[in-house]
Length: 312
Image 1 (cartoon, rainbow, N blue to C red):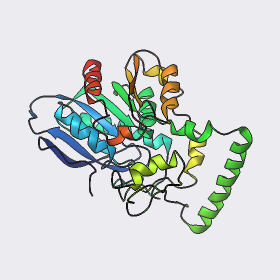
Image 2: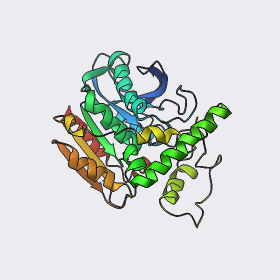
Image 3: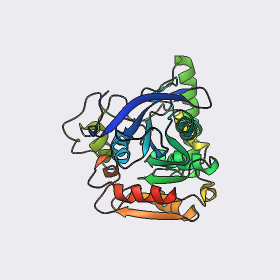
Image 4: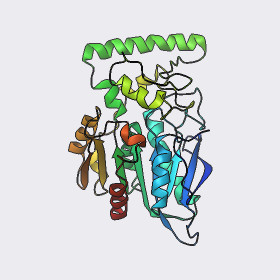
């Protein structure tokens, strides 16, 4: 299906698939420079999509650029999403989503052919930044992580709620499981329209309007990214903490990249405080959260390039 960015004439993109440790097939794209020497080994980067997004959106923007800079780049659709396997569709699982990054490392180190196993890093965008950091807490093969416009989805679901609201949320979601069981399929309510809009509704409040500025307009719309997950997916988020061991990533480096106007900036700041050295916070001027999905005039590719080359 269509990609939101045109492939550079100097870059090859090939469809690939690999399995996670649960046996689920994940579909991805492998980007390489057309000048690559197949007799050499190259550093590699895995690019994870924003939460609910797919490889044809933000990841293709990053992969297209980083491949030109000498990296082998792998993008992929999360389990239950896009072209990857997993049924029911659009189920969210913090454990499986973190596992996907380790499965991507497996693929790069055994199937890609020209990858240096000791030089594999991750760029996680939005929710993928949290899942990538979670994977790196235990998978030491991930040598560096750049967390871009990070969302910690488990914190996003739980931390803004008081105890009574959490109790009521659990009651509501538990009751929904009865309904799902009776219907034979979990409830899923799309967040974005089937067809792209010309503009965001004028009365839509933030941050909902911001999501629409990307996902609901031609800028970032994709039929495989309709927004949200199955309703009861939040039960897993309530029962899981992604970043309790973020300090154990050290001495491998972490780069947090945030927009100065990003509503999500506090997620990166909180994670930065908990992480151990080496770590860095890089603030992009005049950028909101979604600007770091696709705006090549805002995404700091020079910074990312230098970060990974220094890390390796």
